[in-house]
Length: 248
Image 1 (cartoon, rainbow, N blue to C red):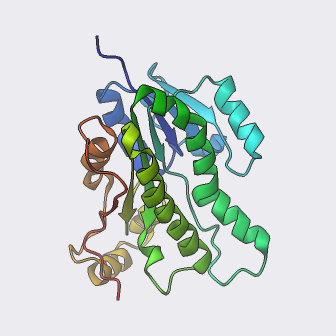
Image 2: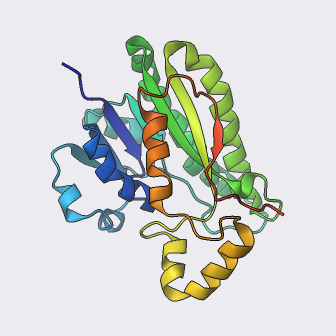
């Protein structure tokens, strides 16, 4: 009998992850899905909320480390696979002189993810299986991107490359997908398509060689491969799935 794999989605109410949930259920994962606010949970379709294979857990990344770990323990979260889908810039575009802003960005984009990974890594080592997936952004290379966001994502990418070397021998494969312009339910690009479709079309034609905006279906099969046992050799990779972005 093949045991169900435990899948922890950190940030399950992000637009891309909402679209992936149905696919993950079809793969027979036992899913632990975190959300930050009751409002964000409204983005999840009712039929998915009712699934017995998904346990939704409220988890705010701005909480103290001890509280986050306590929530994981209280909800008896298990994770053979972790998808880290929380991130953002807090809308800060200029250089932030306040270290508090830097700390918040690092907490949101990488440090809390490391905290959660560390909580499960020892058991993954014992089981000789683990798959961890992150999401980064072309902001890392874009000289016009907000420094606070691009620096945090650069930290994330370096963590992926270095940690994959440490844990690869234990069949724990750690990878990252780097994205560009995606319209997924609830995100800003999704809203922009509704409010100003012509502007979005113009931007994507200028910025992406495929000349259209990305949608969740462009990613689902890749994500399923990265996190599955079928992936036996891709490790420490930062994979661009970005529509052929034109960086200059």
